[in-house]
Length: 463
Image 1 (tube, rainbow, N blue to C red):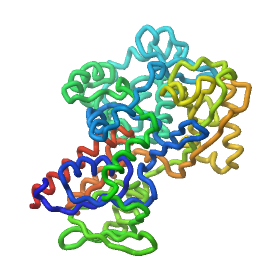
Image 2 (cartoon, helix red, strand yellow):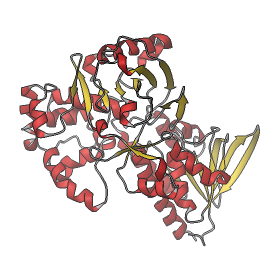
Image 3 (cartoon, rainbow, N blue to C red):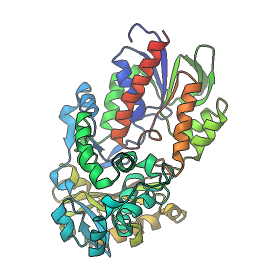
Image 4 (tube, rainbow, N blue to C red):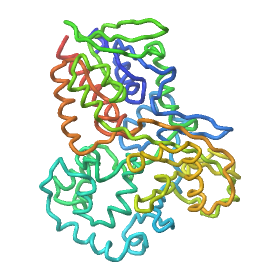
């Protein structure tokens, strides 16, 4: 690729844009990244709060692909790379006000009080449930209830979906939001049989299932990853550059943006957008109104991330896990909590413990109509009750995301198909980001290689 002098402009310096730029830079490509903020990382924000570390966006990643390790080694980040403690493998679910460990094996499942005997027996029927007729237009809720029963939906999948997407299983498309789950039924006829048979295939692809992948972070938090790429590529990155529109030209694209109070234009052969769907919508409205409408229609629910620090002596609940998730049926003021200082060591002094709570999401977006102090106060009150805490927190901080995680809701496949069509019509314009191919850090890193290969192929075909 070093002989192919194509200009590449990337919109956005979040993890998707930066990792793709990293692979391209290794091929000596001519790259310019435009980022509207004054700092890189997108939703990856790691902030010190009175000596504690508050990850205000993604709190960790899953090492589902070897690309994670390759990236860490490329950036000389190995010394700062952390795996979660073994205590972090234990997860809790709240039911009837009590925290129950999520059973991780057959024996634990038989003994758990999280599910009733009836629900446990219901799972035995799963291998005999046929394929659905709904195909791509089936919600996660309908898929799970049909295959595993209502109670499993209410007390396992409902809180899990809230923890991953801050979403509702009744609204999310199983095909788009959880494609590997959907594929187990389509390819193997069932979840239990499919899980067993797919393990060997995954090993051949050198992939690791999310449920068994190692959780990772960095000593300085998740933002350490994008900041490391920035240090390598700062001469290629223009900060405080807000893109306003894009035009197609005879040889590529004109990108119009404002920076330092001036309106500017940059010409490029190849354009890659990795910014949020709702941000790109206004930029491409003149180029492709249908794409703009589709991007704008993707729902991003509001979420508040609440950071709390307590004295460990004031906490009665044993701190022996990742944290807990809350089913919707429990009707609580927040979605769940991470036991942050348990997951990664040395995040707090021994006499303190830090926690990260999540409020709102699709399940409870209306909560933000109330005063902020009331929202935070209610969450702290309920958290204290669940954890057996009688004292006030030593530290309280928060980050409000008015538009957080894109929801891959029912019918999302139509958006996905149109994204492919747009790239086919507008040669050299590529779409990436967390609204395509998965929302997690691992998904974004894996998809960066996919996009890199698409761009590489395009350059090869258009010498």
